Amino acid sequence: MNQPTLHVAHDRGVVTVAIDNPPVNVLSLPMMTELMTLLATLRTDDTARVVVFESANPEFFIAHVDMTLVDAEIDPTAGAPDGLNVFQALGEAVRALPQVTIVKLQGLARGGGAEFVAAADMSFAAIGRAGLGQMEALGGIVPGGGGTQYLLDRVGRQRALEIVLGADRFDAETAARYGWVNRALPADEIDAFVDRLARNVADLPEGTIAAVKHALPPHDVADGLRREHEAWAGQFIRPAAEKLLRGALAAGAQTPDRERHLEELLRSITV
Image (cartoon, rainbow, N blue to C red; front, side):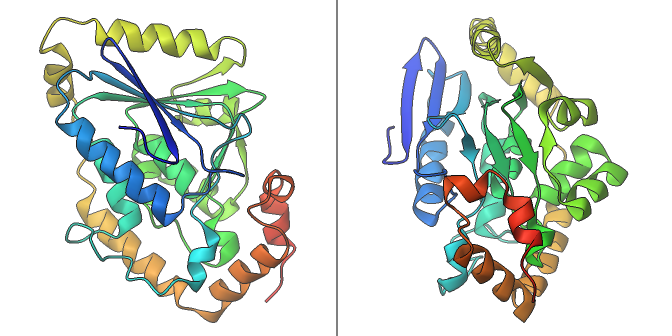
């Protein structure tokens, strides 16, 4: 199940997926394709009970969707299920897995990376190291990979509006208090905690995970995803969005140094 940007290990029902797309783990089209291939394989893997997503880069989980896609002539709905774009399809594929999915967040996750975190069944963030943000508004667009709907489900409308329109980075403790992640954990304890949780879940009696996931299904957000895509697509074609994204790339976005303070970089660009 290994892919160029994914390192996969399988141990007694627990599959660990380490994301590795240097320098900052941008969610590129090749990486999305590799993730979708992996998720399709996992859907039919009866030996896998828990899937833990982590990063090979201690600073970045998934930085965000690759900004260079502004130059790619792609149809964002091509190959996606009806009513979805390719970014939303990734999040929905995560939510549809029969296994329990856990994100171990020890670095930064913005935009599409934050959407991936919210799509998982559970997520845990390292205090002092993890950060979450939906910074799309600073680029003249809206979250387009399920972020609006996953946030609405996790944190409620008022906090979702704060996150999307305020476009700030949230630390682990605040994200946990809002319900964006399950818990904030000390950085030196998160590995052991997630390992123990994953092992305990994987060791449950046969059929238990399926029964619990059947009783607690993810909310149906199909209508909301259609609205989100319309809002995203309508903004993405505006001149301001293109200028802001190109300006961010010219200013060093997607390099480690500038990604550490991406919100400030985006706010410095004028159109």
